[in-house]
Structures are given as structure tokens and as C-alpha cells.
Image (cartoon, rainbow over all chains, first blue to last red; front, side, top):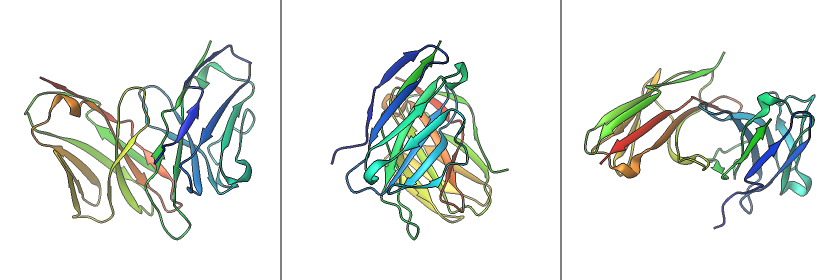
Length: 116
Length: 109
């Protein structure tokens, strides 16, 4: 079974530039998550999708971050404009969880973003 | 505010030297307590889920236990390949995982 795919693996941009990350979840997984992991910290949930609907985006800085999941499969996370404090690893995860049942999340390798 | 705290931040062990990692949590409506392993440059890898106080789960040299306020990850006779960061996460009532900052484990041969 193929895992969660993410690209690019690394990205370096200057502050105020924009950047986009892509995620392809495990086939058949209805739930998709984007996390931000700052060096030395645990992952922090940014947004959760159930199919192509948003379940939770309470911790997404909506003035600069946006995410979409078209057709309930792939997802993109965008930052515009980037700030220095956005330097982190952005992790995508998927699971077959539904409202009634929770199953463990499978994580992709992440995209390491450096903002200079 | 929901919070998960892990200790120690870093732990160095000799191969074969058993020890425990601690995870204390205050998560309202806790549905489950999760342990993940994270290797450098990779995403977290699922290890265990614990749902009720007194529950224990084992996998090779790892055993996870849960009380009403804490969870422990016991490592018995560790090997160098057990070196990684171990993350603990509490699942709240809305199915959201709240992660601790992790314990970086280094096992020396």
C-alpha cells in the first residue's frame, strides 16, 4: 500500500513570497490533515478535511494560509505572504476515520520550509 | 486549555539499559492517548493507542501504559535502532490530536 505522498520535500523562499505544498493521501482515506511542526516541537493541527469539506480550521492563520481539497482526494496548502516564523515542516496525514469511528493517522514525510 | 507535556526532553541510554518516557496530559473529553515514533526527516509513525486507565500495549521492546493523568512508554533493553523522537498525543472530543513536544531518545551501542 502506497503511503502519503508530499511535494516538494524542501523549499526555501524569501519573506513575503508565496509557496504551495501538495499532498496525495492513501487511497480511500476520507480524512486528511495538515500539520505544522516547528523544530523541537510536536505537530500542530492546521486544518482537517473530511472528504472535501473542512471539519476543523480553528488553528489555521487564515490571513495568510489557505488550503483546499478538490474532489476529496489531493490537497494543497498555500502560504501568502510568508513570514520568518512560518519556517517549519509541514506534514500531511490521512486516515479512514469517520464521525463514528476513529482510526490512526498515517503521516507523509513532510515539506521542510525555510523562510529567509 | 488542553495540554500534553513530555519528559524528559532528551534521554541518552546505553544499549540494554531500560528506561521510561513520561507523558502527562490535561485534555478535556480525552478519547484516546497515542504514541508515535518520528525519525529524522520523516513523518511520525503510529505505535500505540490507549483508551482507558490501566490499559497496556506492547510491541517488541516497547510497552505503553495509561493512568488517568499520565502515560508511560517503557523501553526494555533498547537497541541503537530504537533511537528516535517519541511523540505522545491526546485525542480530544472533536477527534483532534494534541501533541507533546516529544522525547529525543539516543541509544548508544
